[in-house]
Length: 115
Length: 117
Image (tube, rainbow over all chains, first blue to last red; front, side, top):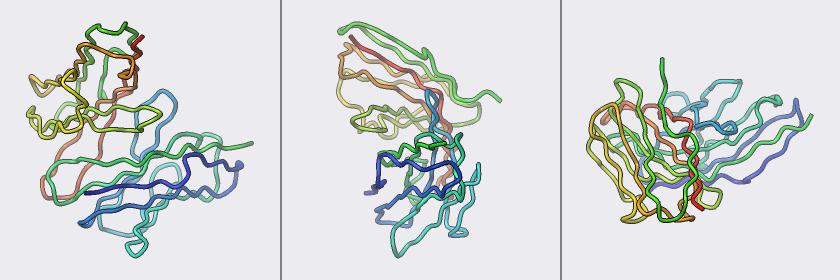
């Protein structure tokens, strides 16, 4: 069984400040890990994914995440927040062994960016 | 390129009525997923199809919910009878499964917001 825990349902940062959204996973097999972003009244779109290549993964809009097996973490960061980054962010894990793309999502973290 | 298309975008209905939500996946994608999103429960996977065949429906909450995929370009999620607790945003997503290889990306539609009064 897999699970994802996102620490902090709400995170508030000032424009230009570092963004850090935390994600810890539990998986009995080596995982694939994803970050998705959801803007208001829209579906989810992929920010980045880890599929066992480089442990530091770069995504769209200046976001990146680092896979740390020893900490079972996949935290999302961005050096400088922009107002347009305000959205809800979801971490997800999938079982690379099983066929298909069944993802287990975390509860989400709403990012607020203050001017 | 057209993305995943869902209809209706908004539906308001009364308790006891039948609700049908529709989804057209991206052409060429042969996996389709129905998710439900609520404030209380977050994103929940309801059912997953591969090549039009339901693979895992363990997330379907109860017998009032049913989903079909009659062909590769169309799926429906039906609730009959609907109840106020079914109020949520229902998302459809599609992808290309890769068997034992790296998993791919899920492409989400914009969702159908259901309100049951």
